[in-house]
Amino acid sequence: MNKLLAMKAFVSVVSNGSFTMAGRDLGLAVSSITKLVASLENEFGTRLLNRSTRKLEPTDSGATYYQRCLAILSGIEEAEDVVMDGPHSPRGALRVILPMSFFRVTVAPHLPRFLREYPDINLHVSFNDDLQSAATEMFDMAVGKGDLQASGLVTRVLTRGPLVTVGAPRYLEEKGRPCSIEDLRDHDCIVSRESQLWRFQEAGRPRSVAVSGRLKVASGDALLEAAVAGCGLAQGTWWLFRKALEQTTLTTVLSEHACEGDPMRVVLSEGKYLSKKARVFLEFLIAVTQRESAPASHSSAPSASP
Image (spheres, rainbow, N blue to C red):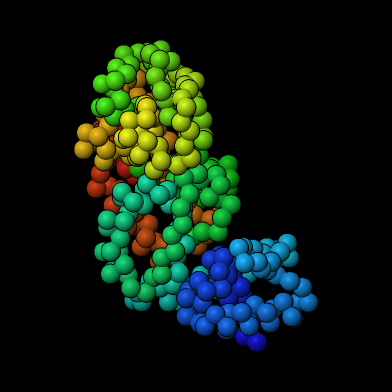
């Protein structure tokens, strides 16, 4: 048995949740992937995967082995990157976690250029709006909001922007524009799973206000679409709403009370060696976000500095 190939097969099965997808990932037949994983289970004398017609997930032993395999394979990959660095093109799999809205509006339009420029990079993208939960997943790089300084992860600020409150023209025509923070009590507010507290500034001081509404959403994309549809007022970073604001499908309210939003951060695993493929993707993210900067009156220009 090729132990290294078996480890790669097992990791790919767990990461993809599928023998078929693992085969595509590694360029092997499904039967070969199945045999490699079975050979590991036979060698260890224990089951590594729980298989059913609906779900495939690691056993407790499999989950532990998966984490160890990831560390080993990552170390091998880093060693290869050191040797191959220099005139060689970046290559290999790059695991990236992005907010869906950030990928759809900012990254996807420019992604063909990146893929053409780096044909040897296999980009594996998954979606998560919450950096706290994304930090529990396996990744080379993640993008999102939030402060993870206490987590031990390496973070860099990608872009900043104001926290804005918005509404669709049809909603504002029906309900009227709020003229003060207190007016929010008379409005339907679309709340997120993170908090029902909205943040403002008043007389130069921060102020948090509890809002209420019948609609609660679990992602930035859902918040944006619900606001554009006229379901109520919404609050989020300017970065999330910027395209809708440009197209006037949303308009800002209470602009005089807008405060600084959480910065969009790029997160690397703790102590993660910045491989050549990760470095060029980081440069790509910086370039595409700097194309559109937040209003200067609210925010400093985007930065890649820690």
